[in-house]
Image (cartoon, rainbow, N blue to C red; front, top):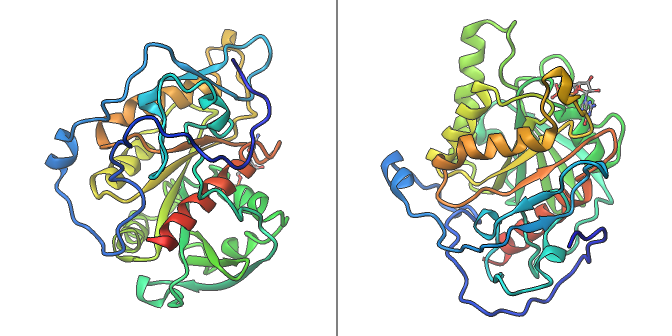
Length: 311
Ligand code: GDP
């Protein structure tokens, strides 16, 4: 069954005890981990013979996304089971994310640029939860930020000279932050500068106690890039909570030209990074051209945020 409409709120019937979710949310005290514990950690034992169809944005003649139960991101206090016939309606469109009772207050009604910081210590200190957007330069980060807040030029602030290397905070609804981090992988930037950005961004990831999740943007219109895989694996090794945002999913390469469809690139990326994570990271397919995935990102952020605030 493939559903076309998703109900926004769900009260779930629990049949099984919940699996453990070490990845959600980030403990409020930064944690240090060794690669060995992560790599040897057992994966979820959930399994199902039947893959679950996921509503996606494929054209009618293309195969639908299917996902097995053990590849779902199941928020805490939420249960899934193989014999739950409504499960596919509880998965956010074009993603592996199961909705939880915390998915509410997702709308953006107000957005304002607050400040640019060059060090983690200089970031806002009001304790509001935040989500950081990061990705290779040109991945579509500014376009996504503008689409999330429904403003054409808000993210231009981060592109102004002097601000591209900063941690840029945007306050949403006076209650949480979207944080624009410097893009990585600028071929033209001097090596020294590239390393420096990496250093302060990593410091922010590890020491920013109000960071709920990093949203790592990956271009789904091209095959996985080494630098993106390295970034994802670093976040995995440091146990920094991460959501993968696949961008440019509207760009469909023709098979005959040797290009892969976004769905295929998304699947390949999952397979390449799965060894780095204890539990499957959440992912969402998006396009800033069609606004695909916009509401899903906001709902995912809302459920992460509401859970984080409560615990
Ligand atoms: P940034 O450098 O990561 O901030 O990337 P931008 O948001 O400036 O986008 C880089 C380029 O990709 C621009 O030409 C955008 O128009 C294009 N782009 C961004 N998002 C999408 C998308 O979802 N689909 C398509 N087809 N193009 C996009």
